[in-house]
Image (cartoon, rainbow, N blue to C red; front, side, top):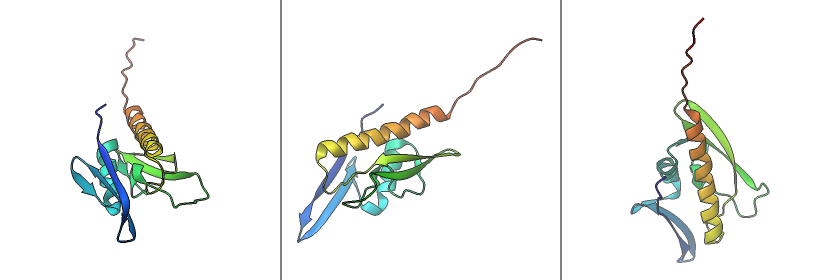
Length: 121
């Protein structure tokens, strides 16, 4: 597996909080995080518009978020632990994003299979 460098730049400017994501010197705004998710996982985002970068509202009641992906003609949903990209510490974000990527990639590997049955009667 090839490591991909993801940069999350967050802060406050002129009193407005921001959170920006980039990979390979390309910056993605929140509305286009699905593209970055597709590049990293190799699967398309379905109902979850941001894929592995789907985040939570601060103080959310649920501690998981449902994210759907499509690989070829197969779809699967994952219950990912919530991430607050604007407030969680770096280690928490890193561990949770890596876990999300691993789950999706492990699923992709399990989707395709082939076997040959040969016998005489």
